[in-house]
Image (cartoon, rainbow, N blue to C red; front, side, top):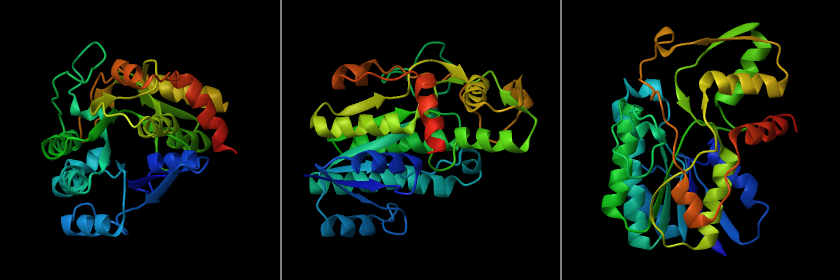
Length: 285
């Protein structure tokens, strides 16, 4: 039996992990949210680890309100940086392997080809800065870790772009979506399956990895695909980023190179359109 702690237990990725692990018999998983475990409090984290025995910790906990973070750096840093550091320390002291979820926002988006794990990081906003500092804290305090950067995460759980678009298509007849930000939508269930494969592999190939679905899209492309698959009757128009200003700057280009994770764990990654079709079907099950 593999004992696993999942933080951020009410988030969409944790829910997707729960969907998958409930169908297996070799995993014993404890899901926590901040009410059960305050990762920003080292004493609380140490006490929790002393009461339980884990082989892995999957850190899904994060301050992900990208725009709010611009005016809430203290809280963003507490969760994204200090929380990651505390978990790394506890994992080190208890011989636990940490799987930490990070983001494409650690890059500035100025590259024109897919970002690999060796590319220079240069976050442009508070969210990305605090997530990068969380990565660095883990690297500085722990040897047994997998940092998995992902992007444009969505699922049938929680709040995300897919669910927002479906909701808006019921309330509106027309909508404008940004067309000049390029990346790859990532189905959280696909990421969850990859995380569980990493665990079951018992791999010691620790380090930083990238994961998203295959393919490339703009937010406009993503929205159009959602409406097409959902058979939504809505008029969709493309706009540029400058026409939709936000407090936090988004990377213009954040496609991730998945060669390392595909090679090390022998995985095939679905195209984002194929996974979107599955996610929309599950919305109505």
